[in-house]
Image (cartoon, rainbow, N blue to C red):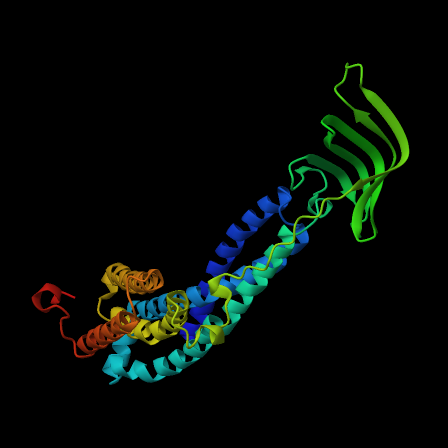
Length: 353
């Protein structure tokens, strides 16, 4: 229970950092007119769900290290040992924790994360297919998708239909055109969207030239360019797990192996965390913590390397990947056995530990 509370706290801190970084990026994109402000919250939620299956194993691993490290600092592990509860006594509660973590992380890895990636791809496709007017942000000069016009709107109502103080710059038959109007609105005729401006002025040509004209109007309509509708492109991370099964394509095999590996890593990491947190004295917490994190990153990057080799065709099947998991499980078991029996891990080299 203490590990779960610590894991929740660590995960919350990491999520806050993740949300701050992502929010800043989305706000910059909204300021540039790439996405509307109303979509930031939904995209943040989808991005968060898509990365939880990668973040949770690390957060669980760090939480176990922190909890057992604090217990050793407060002499609680010594009290447990004096009561006849050695390191193997932690296997039973750890197995319950492992089962909960495997179910939770597996749910994200096999279902929720791909679903969120697919939903995010749909939102991004919808944003790419917006009209020029929908991308206008009040108070900013926004260039059209074709780079042939610039729009500026001082403000717009909540319904996004009524606009105040409009400015439009563009080209008409090679001539520069500037149109300004105090009011405007959007309307649709025969499936085509128009920006209608009222009580404004249109300026044609370069100032000072003989062909320069100023035209005042009561109502002026501009056809809004609709961006070409592109097909929905879902990344491989967003494909459903059922679609990956029973396929010999290296891309699909590598993605399925990666999703399974994120679940298989959980029990191995728990064993390493239990052994790493119990092998150092109270004054040597930092070396044990650094070594434990080093084990995680070596394991994680090795899995990622083999998955990449499967994806590129450098490895024909996933046998090496499963051998790596088996090797790490044996190493974690041996590490745990050495710590449980107070034996050095590497003979004389590790006798001082």
